[in-house]
View 1 (cartoon, one colour):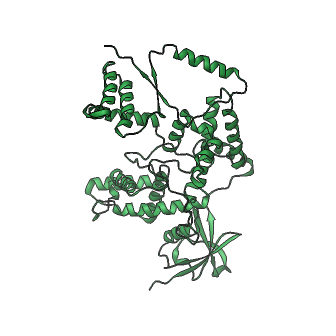
View 2 (view 1 turned 120 degrees about the horizontal axis):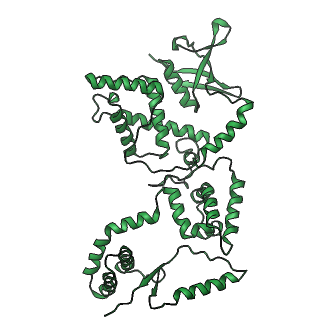
Length: 441
């Protein structure tokens, strides 16, 4: 009958832990895997134990049978420490190579591409695939090999999402078996159900490691299963939010980020702010902005005061790209073009006062042929009428007969620019200016 095992584990001089295992490990790999999970060690390691035959001197643990009752183990890190002569060089090169790696750059792919595993794992998989192609022999995956595969897959999945959904796990597991058919599980309805379940557990363990390391997008959910109270005010990423709560860029802290924010505020007070400088500062302060929005949830008025550049048209589009990696305007107009023909049919079928106004819009676009901009304009002007909403605060209509309109705007802007005390006005949204063509009989 298997009984629990109590271990005394020396991680370092200041970290000596008592670990209780519910059952005695049968292999050395099992022991190391359980210690890695319970201790939250983010690096590879080996173990040494105190041998009573040598006055409790430390001996490398190579066989689980050598493990005594209630042993004392010491964790030996296999990650080399940098020498003093190269430490500074390593830090500088690391900072330059990381660049903008604190934010994700892409959405979850339509087809998940299985990454390359370590050389020894790839060699064993290649041999297994050859045997499978020859006589349909399924591979018996050792524990250490399975651990390496799951660890690499979890790392790759995290580069897209910290919290993959069930469909995402299906994509990864099916892609793994498709690329390496020798890993197919006989007797499974899909051939990869076991891999899917293992991936879910491994992803949870991977998030635990990152949480202990201080990664903010998983640290925000600390305490949900422990004794601490959960952070109920913090939400998880919604769909398409690939950069929900990123870490600060390398070398940045609260003070440096706040100084950049103040620089942004001062730049927006100028009559002609530099769009290039604003874009650079908005990119570098993105993680601070997301921290405020997600954790503090300030009102819009306060956000406008702290981040005035965020409420300009160009930065609204840029912020959407930072959060979702998708172009807001391009996505909106692409979706609008797909339904434009149907919308125009609906407009033609409407009767009454609404139908009369819609018919005016339709006459205008018929006079310009198949101009895509005119069709978009007609749909955007007609949709609020369909929903019974007031468009006076959203659209500004200017007749084409006002031939001096551009000259008037230029004169007004010159007079404003001449005033040294002028402040550049900031609007939450830029209203659409629609040019209405004059109809001729």
